[in-house]
Length: 391
Ligand code: SAH
Image (cartoon, rainbow, N blue to C red; front, side):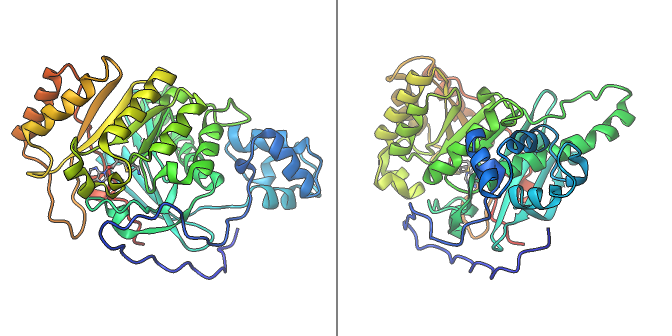
């Protein structure tokens, strides 16, 4: 598809400290796409477009199973209407504008332009036994956390379900195209997985503030092929700043998806400053909601904790966090400290290694499983909190 001629969206200005945008600005909506709907909705969509409903299944196989939108390859569709059907039902939503690699090619950040000029990023990370994709749910973010580059750039708009799903499909295609190469290098069998096994909603945006589209994307990711991509729900992590009503709503979906809570401080005084939404929903309310999520789904919750030198890394804060988690129960939670990744204009840096180690040990002493998160792609601004998509 040729690039959109729509007027580019204005670039959002840096939000004032503490200002939160829970509702995204209303902007033009992206074109509708097959991936916006479940199978029943796709049939209706095709009918609206003037095609028989059963084409929805065929298109779904091409898109979710073969990962293709090339009409030439869809020989099961009538030659006369193929092109037009595909253009209408599966318009290209993402235009790749940049790709950056780090870690010897094992971390790949992609920057995409959307139909209206908004930019989003996703990151593909290859490991020995899994492939994790970090995806965006909004262009920008309204949560305004002062240590996060995305938060500092403000919120442009919500992504549609298909715009979220397309990031994963693009990553899956990239992996598929690596297959030949890897086989040539390593003989007949590629030694590492070439399928996306894990997805974290830890790119740009607060997914629970774009609830409907994000939930739709979760369904497209986990629905078995060819209705969806057939990724195990257990491999998916929904990360939130702590929108308590959103967590509660997501709990009711009862999906075996992991919840990650970006806590970063165990006390309201500091968390009010680090996570502005804490002025609305407090540490204990967020922890209670996370605990109830575990109770409902049986999935162990992750607590994200970016260690910021001399800000939130004191031993007493580790103890307070350990106490608050342990008093709610055993085995329901683990903590993921992350050394803070540097962001432009911020004076904060990562904790010293000894301080980090002490923080971890103190949590463990409270019986809380704790593992420092490895951080990938910081040299390409692809790590947590660094996605700001300046093109
Ligand atoms: N809105 C979601 C996703 C945000 S990004 C959320 O708040 O969870 C995913 C994680 O990266 C969050 O835990 C976020 O707090 C963390 N993060 C943000 N900026 C960071 C930085 N500079 N260094 C390390 N982690 C950061």
